[in-house]
Image (cartoon, rainbow, N blue to C red; front, side):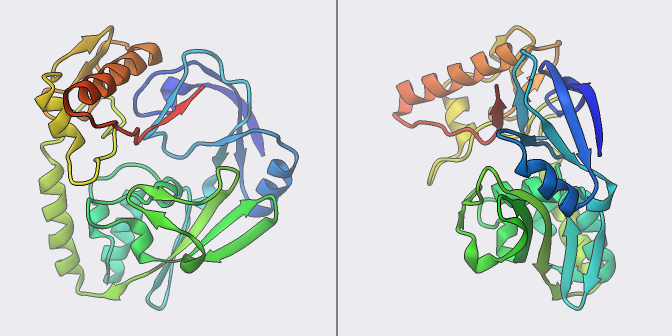
Amino acid sequence: MRITRADARDLTSMRCGGTIEHLIEVESPEELATLVSGLERFLVLGGGTNTIFSDQPTSFPVLKLGKNFHRIDREGDLIHAGAAAALASLLSFSREEGLSGLEDLAGIPGTVGGAIRMNAGTGGWGIMDSVSAVELVDASGVRTLDRAQIAYTYRHTDLSAAAVVTGVWLKLKGEPPQVIARKIAANLERRKSQPKGASCGCIFKNPSGESAGKLIDQAGLKGRRIGGAVISEAHANFIINDAGATSADILALMALMRETVKTKFGIVLEEEVRIIG
């Protein structure tokens, strides 16, 4: 276990936020179970691609999973991936092993644990569709849940906020690596037009039957700026930190997006990102 002090801007893709007073890196599920059993409040931070910390210091512990949680292995038609493994690494491994089913993850940043918790994917598919079982640590200790024990929907699972995902078993199907490579390339090409720069990707979930980005665009908000934060001209559901934006700038812009869409269309946008503090 290693305890350090860090800046949230160095650990998140939005590059904003204040000081994290206690960043704790753990190296085993057992060590993690001992640690969380004594904590009243904590946060697990993966790749930081969908998290926005307050500009104020974060005083409660923030946990990071260490190198032992980066492992990816194969067992038959199953892949076992640690929660700290990057999605890009998982996808490369599945391609090399000739195991198909995860190609829609191509171009999505972040780690396996974060993807499981929010059921990352595309509009019609989420990673939970390929899950066999999820390994986690919670108040009961180290345990494994079958997929049938976890309720999930679009960009959501019912995993407790106090449960830390440590690994996942994914059931895939055999396919030639070159076929998988073509599917990955097609998804990467489709995402090539997404905005560049410091961001969390899509800020809001798509409402049922609607596109959040299209609604924000139709509300006339593309290019709107508050401080160093701007709504992307390329994709209205992206906020870009292009001039040293504070978290307050970004949250104010999110509030403007939400309020304007509600006023114009009667639709309440739901955040896809985590707001801490």
